[in-house]
Amino acid sequence: MGLKIRMSRAGTTNRAFYRIVVADSRSPRDGRYLERLGTYNPLLPRDHKDRVVLKLERIKHWMGVGALPSDRVHRFLAKVGVMEAPKIRPQTKKDKPKTKAQERLKAAEEAAAKAAEAPETPAAG
Image 1: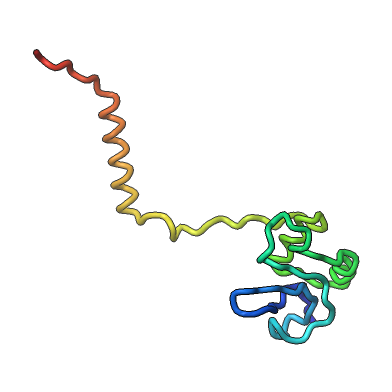
Image 2: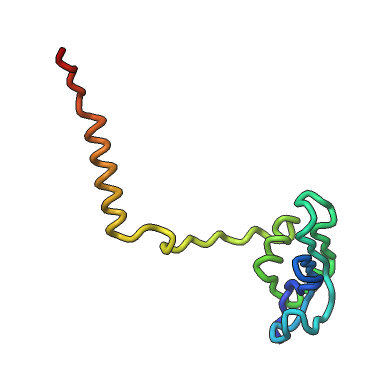
């Protein structure tokens, strides 16, 4: 049985509230869980003490048994100091311009650099 420490959604529409739970990885997101380990309320300000509430002793116990935290819970635990921060994955190239557009931008930059290097001729007058 693969155990996950993850969030289970509660609350109403546009008023989300999450329980941090340990559950079997095959069970549904809001379905059956083994134990509630904390809460997360995204509606509270970031510096509010009740935004993220964790039962650290129980989390350490479940991690010792083999439970793996989800990405978001991993970040919460890293902020508290239980785990080291997750590695930041490199971004994809999909947000960058295509090859032809990059060539045009490079050519425009080179033209601007040449124009800046060329000495300006004084106006005849």
